[in-house]
Length: 41
Length: 483
Image 1: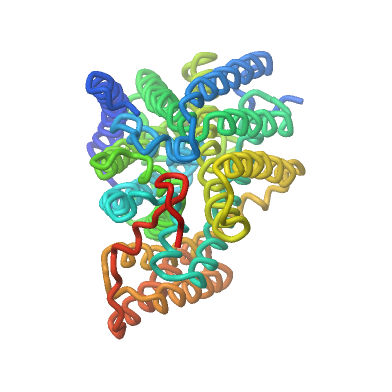
Image 2: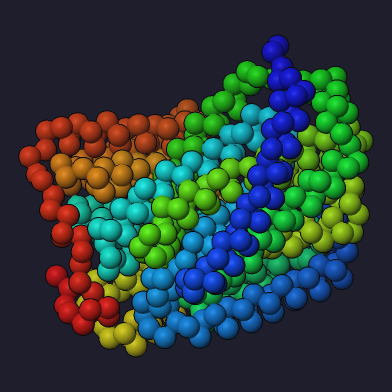
């Protein structure tokens, strides 16, 4: 049985958590930018 | 009676339920004041910016399944299970160019049904409406049931009460605010979901590191980290195609494409896809730490909340409750709005009452939202578990719409014959595969059959569609008459 290496396991999960956090941050930054440009709605 | 695996006391559950319900209704009513016309109510004035556009696409696609079922997928299918779930993000990514095209070709469009009617004619439109409304309604029922089951499982709130409250809250704010309320609340819900998932994930990792989890998996459940796990690999393709079919055809996504500013749709769907991609992994991996943490999982569907509550205590359970409620609300409100738009615009206005005034349409839309809520509530009330699986019947049907939609938007030669028979043959053969071969083949067969029919019909087609025909004048937006 070929198993995923531990490094892949760690990178996959760490990467997913970081990307999820970046997602939240990006949405906030975009909202601020849209507010400044008066393009929220 | 408290659910045996409840991770939060009923008192906290009731307080959170009341608090979140009041907040969503208040915000919905507040944003709903902007909806002064039918176009404002249905499409948020067609001026939605990038931040709200990306957030609403992302939040709507994060259902309670994503946050609660992803850990179960990881627990049962391991690393491939999480990756399989993540492939649903490709639906959003691939819809991005379509969103741009939709906005260009149909600047006055209202629904996905408008496109099928104008592009392929009325017979294909009827078939499409049957598929789309069936899918939208079964998704609504599955979310209503999931709401009741989840709130019962998380905090011991009786199923009927939890299900009723979440449906009622979403009906009220969608009724008052239309797409303005849906998109506004979606933004906050998407932040809650993303931040909540990170808090729980980082919290769990502070108690157990990768080495401990990995070592435990090797010794106790090595299949979960097997590179070649056949069932999970099959699930990838089915999930991918079901996801693409769901997004390509559903008015939930088309209404957002119509609602976003001209230059925003493509970017918003791309961003939403990238933000969504890691969510099933970030939310699901905690299930793989349960063994190393010594947590006895008696019910795999509750593995996520169990791990969060065991490690992070009451705070973890509260975060899970809020994330689950937000995931449910962000999907239910979108379904109510988009399905009622489809019924109001395509059935009421186009078939039953073509001369309806804006006031009449708005009233009809309100009745339809209430009607959908009541009908979903009645069907959800008896808690018939097997009803939840009805949504999976829709898999081959929505899979069969992928090619008629995609080719219809880009190929002048794509024909009515191909679209109609692609949807019919794909749905029928896909459903046969569902029963004869297994659920994991249904969307694949439905989409493949439809692809073959659409491509062959296009190759032999002599028609050359005039794109201008898609820009239909709408009496509520232009003052003109419809064709």
